[in-house]
Image 1: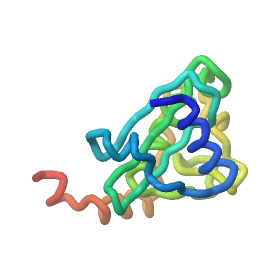
Image 2 (image 1 turned 90 degrees about the vertical axis):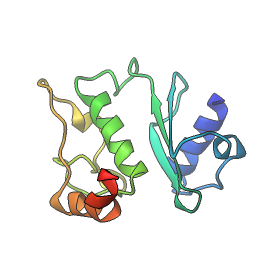
Image 3 (image 1 turned 45 degrees about the vertical axis):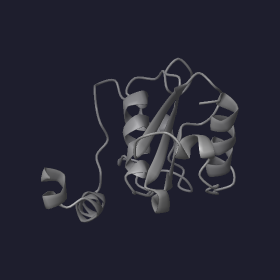
Length: 138
């Protein structure tokens, strides 16, 4: 995936809060969730196009700040997959889906011990609503 596309999509999501049309290059890719790992300079993000049953999770290198801080990469990746599955942001810095416009930022995921930040009970219920047990078993 071209790095200029990832950078532009990140700017659309992060800076402008927009969801552009699904790029043709992504439409042609197989899979419902496309994961892009990149060395490009952008803020990690996820974007969904539910009407096309597609999502993109784009993750910046773990060798740059704040991704290089202990536990940040694992929680940023889980956070962005939460968006790909349909979750939005909350404003609780102790929870995984905290984010804009709240003052929560990825550096808050920093932890000296291995730790995944949790989902709220409401977010768990929402995921079960989106993906019911009978669907997951089939």
